[in-house]
Amino acid sequence: MSKKYNIAVIPGDGIGPEITTAAVEVLEAAASRQGIEIFIKELKAGGAAIDSFGIPLPQETIESARNSDAVLLGAVGGPKWDDVEPEIRPEKALLGLRSGLGLYANIRPVVVYDELKDASPLKNPGNIDFVIVRELTGGIYFGKNGGYQSGDHLPDGTVKGKVVFDTESYSEGEINRILKIAFDLAMKRRKKLTLVDKANVLVTSRMWRSLASQMSFDYPEVEFDCLYIDNAAMQLISRPSSFDVIVTSNLFGDILSDEAGQIAGSIGMLPSASIGAPGTPGLFEPIHGSAPDIAGQNKSNPMGSILSAAMMMRIMFGEEQVASDIENAVKKTLEKGLRTSDITFIGEENNFTLVGTKEITEAIIANL
Ligand code: IPM
Ligand code: MG
Image (cartoon, rainbow, N blue to C red; front, side, top):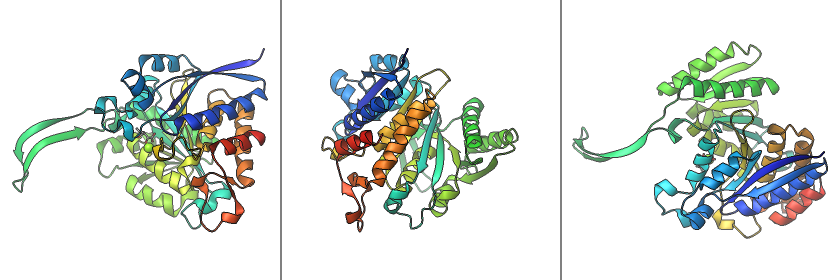
């Protein structure tokens, strides 16, 4: 009997539909070679759902996602929905899926392919191969927020007026479970873990630091250190190849992973996995956004999405062969000089062939 996986696909907005279409084509081709069947159920979220249902995350989407084996997501958002009420912004769909599916661990691997080293703005990027483990369902993204009118004045006499606030809050349980994911991942890799925080200022960070230091005793083989976020932003540029696993809070992880995307040459190359409790569906998506400026023009780089499908096969289903087949096909396609416009660079025009989303997808399938 052949194996079957039920995948919920949420194309979303902007370039989302074209990159998820590409990822599904590659996934089906790679899986069928191993006798695996992929069943796709397409669901709406983000701006697409606002247009159809007036809300970014319909109940049917969250229910179907929950009943699937895994979720593949494109991207959500775009200028079309910039003026909707904050409560129904497209981004709410992503946050709702993350919290609704309990996806507390966001795994964002950052590698620089040899072929793309010149696309990195760093002079000597070296062998960059690290993973950002970002807490995804807590912190300031989900803390108490709001606003009120104040009659007070600032010390210099300025009228305060409206006061608004977001709050960062973390429980020991939330911190420990993500730390454990990070330590376990470090054990499978080069056994180095860096906690990124702001323990010189924030109470929450000080708890992260003390819990991580405590846990490090259970992992004597893991070389554990801590960096303040401002310093980490700098070290990531000055010595990117020395990092192995980085663990951090929701907001810091969001910022550092975009910086990492730039180091890697293009954010269009980077996949991610968001996972929750064992046995529940994870969500796999590229770390880039919906790029509305190039949507529908056959210009987007589908590799972040394709590599996310590979992560899904490995992490959710243990299908190592399918995952590595996809990753090798991507590498081979780059080796052959095929590039989407985001990973081309000046001075190298004679060494690559500029192609569109469809062409690079066909090449990846042919290279499987
Ligand atoms: C990301 C994105 C999201 C985030 C946005 C779209 C809400 O930037 O996945 O990194 O901030 O988490
Ligand atoms: Mg982000």
